[in-house]
Image (cartoon, rainbow, N blue to C red; front, side, top):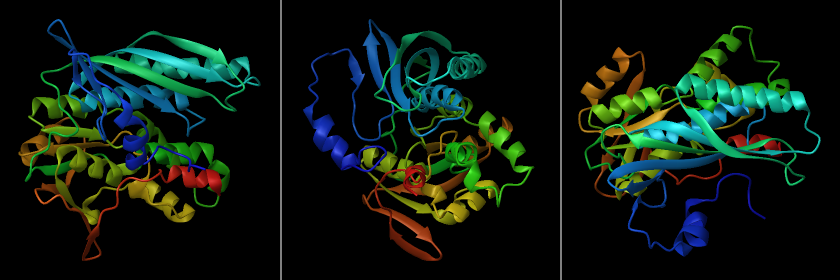
Length: 328
């Protein structure tokens, strides 16, 4: 039996990617480990596409679904234009719940300037809560920026804080487990996190500032995303754990529930490879987006992390910490 969450990179490659055949010359970016998007050359115009499901969240899943899918497009240096949404609904769902999710999706899409252009709805006993799958179509702002475009010596820059999406999901879906530690003012912090879910602003800025690679930190958190960037680029990476920004609320929740905030789903946080980190961070902070250098890409292929004065091996992405809560 498989664990909950994404397939491991080894499973994904061995069970699925190795079986895909490529025949169409229009396909510019094809599926491989760590790559967020596909790209098609349609008579000289690049079209960028990405698809993502939301299965681990219940409350606020509509907003998360829109932002997560659009973030993938932004991480490729593109601007999202249209969104196709599939809703799989359990038989016992109430009309008000469907309306709530639909309003959530429409509101989030409107805020991002993205049109909902189609999709599918279905009531099925194959699910026991709403499952949302979104496919986004976009166009590059200037050029395509792949996950695997980093060069040795590039600095690894991170925006905002670790575990943003995971903190939101846990606080809303597991509120009963957090009664002992949540404070009234924490809900203001959570509202700020909700507004920080999109990485479209930093994606646009980084593309214009000459970023060599980008990757949004979703399942597997910041450390999983950093590993995937290095692997996709054919490089190593050395990360300093103490330099990874972490919100106090996230740290408190993760400590209380005994989960790793650096391996927690982190939509809202973008990882960027750049040769000119000072220029990029200045451009981001000018627009009110906090950013920090957390590591560097290396030519030796070794994945390393420094913590508590020691250097150790950085493990590849495993299932997200969020899924551990479902088993407790």
